[in-house]
Amino acid sequence: MPNEWLWERIRGSDATRIVALGTIAEHALLPCFARNIANEHLSIRSVPENHEPRRVSRRPEWKRKTEWALDYADARHRLSDWRREGWWEIREKNGKEPRLWRLLPVRHPGSRGVGRVEEWTIERLARMSVVETPM
Figure 1 (cartoon, rainbow, N blue to C red):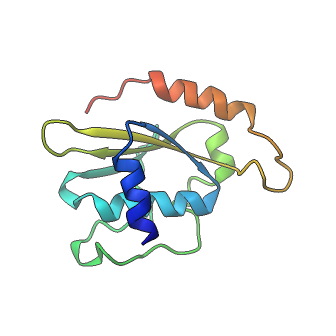
Figure 2 (tube, one colour):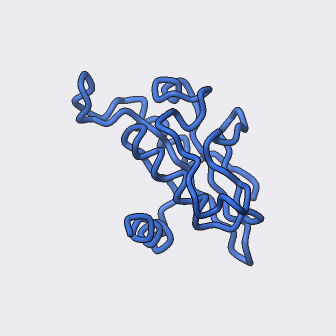
């Protein structure tokens, strides 16, 4: 299963920053976290607005199902909006070692009109690595 493979890659890595190349990647990653971390241990929020993604269900009866539509993760955060500021923070508060991942959705460099990694992306990734967030 693609979800299992993706989750094993995320879980088995020490990576804390993830770049989602486009809306499709964002739509795969957020639900992947939601499906694989128990609701009581999961927190997904946008930084700095502190919004939860609109389509990731936290209801237990929907845990293994998808409510994900072909839409943005949150209408308040389109790909172009991430250029100004922010990212998604995914926290797993479980056991002795809580984990924090930061996810930055960007336009895919191969998409029409982009052709390269945009400069703001590199600056944001650097900022994501130094911002302290209490667990």
